Image 1 (cartoon, helix red, strand yellow):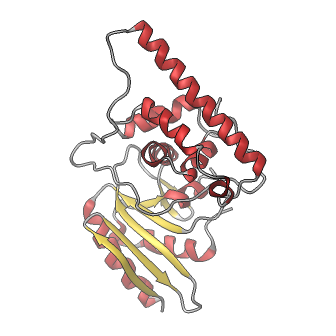
Image 2 (cartoon, helix red, strand yellow):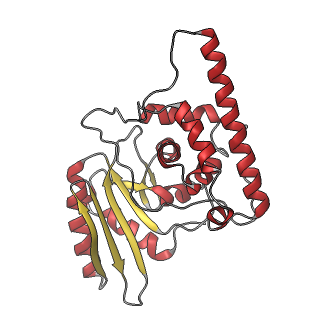
Image 3 (cartoon, helix red, strand yellow):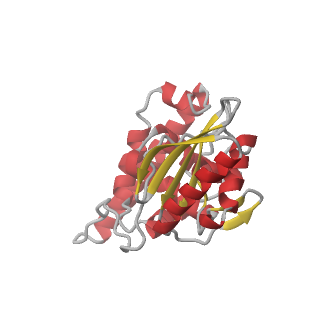
Length: 260
């Protein structure tokens, strides 16, 4: 699955503008572009490490869609974040979010335009689970385990956010499993997949606790885990989307084991 035709048109348009600067496709669109998941995404996320790109791209993109005969309504605007709703003449609407975000890898060029590097997407998804423990975050990270190992995902998150803590992440894994079945079903999972997902997440949580306990015994005078507060350099702020980012495997797809 890929972006739907309208989403792809708008993403291509935005990324082709000179004012796009260093912006690249992120979020669910990037997950689809890299074939991490097979599911629809509800919006288009465009991230740049430069704050000036946000407002410049928002203004240029709004003007470009108006020239197409569409409408663009700004639903939220901040210095480093803009959310707009683009509506085409037949009534279909797409949410487009443009934001500043720290970057640890150079984007890659795909058919749709610049897309966040796979490692960047993986780091963002692990940090989303770490930060809010939503059902969709657990499904995202599970999907990424088809491509990355546990250790690789944790290392990428720590590279992007110096405040990343495996202790807090373990708690987030447990918390994310407590969402009702309906929260996972909305993401395209059947009962068997949901139960497997929960069991695997709890196993990962237990394994992290065991590793931490072993480390504490080996180094009794050290503490494990860091504050979850982001400690990125001042010129690399960590932005997290206020939107609802849902993604996951198709209904009936068995998620890979989190024990790998």
